[in-house]
Amino acid sequence: DGLEAIRELWPAVIDLVRGENSLIGAVIEVALPVALDGSRLTVAFPAGFSFNKRKAEDPAYRGVVGAALARTIGRRLDVVYELSEQAEGQDGQPLGGDEEEMVAKIIAEFEAVELSEGHEPAAGASGVQRQGGGE
Image (cartoon, rainbow, N blue to C red; front, side, top):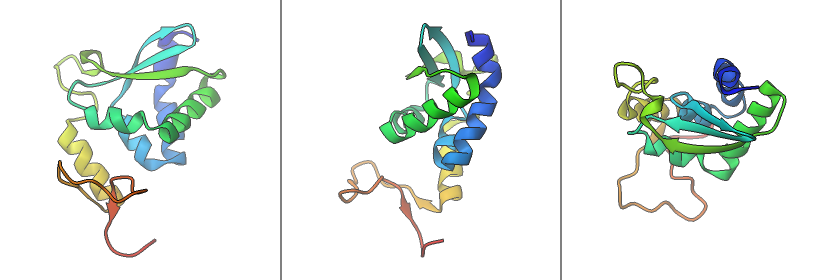
């Protein structure tokens, strides 16, 4: 399973992740596998997508992506994330749109409220607040 094979299967990985956790699925859909060194897979986000990279690095989310990769390609890989121009299209634009569009999509999908820069969430909160009642 080389890098090209993993890239071809990446949309299937995203679909599996989305089925398990739609937030992390939305977060990684702009990422692209860019390097494979033994069992270490480097997945790059476009340079302006630091929010997505930080979310993907959360241990719980990292586990979801790792499990989806293992189910898709048949072996466990250690995934590392980076910001890189390699994850941008030929026109220099991010493959999945820009970060503002992505954040707006996540806010809309999860009925979330974006917190201001200096705001610290309450202990145990994930930084995403839901509006209204439960589902």
